Length: 182
View (cartoon, rainbow, N blue to C red):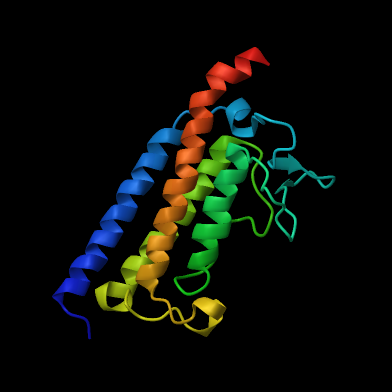
């Protein structure tokens, strides 16, 4: 059983996640297809149509060093599919998206809808744990992170959202200044 301090922390974590999510949502409003797929430097990882007509993100098993610059499309895939949907499916609920693995969307509207759906599923799963449940260990499906708590995972997600959300915001800030010069 957790005490009042842990309950306050749990409420603060959910509230902070909501705030970070609202900042990302605001920054992606009105995203155009050109911005979504814009590659500011050569060698970017992005979402691309495959031979089968389905879109997939660039990814290799062993990430190169330094890692490549990624497009907004790739970053939205990472946030929505790898992080939010992936974490949801590992203990908070069913896989919330129509795509899996490296599959993604070629147009921003569908991608933004998917990321929002993944966010809502992840958040609902955390809230569903209850304040006490946020302090439970993740469990054996999480390998080396098995003894970490759901609160620790929520803080990791907050870091992912803030980090990649800021990168998306920067790309959106740079796009009108640099893409026009191309």
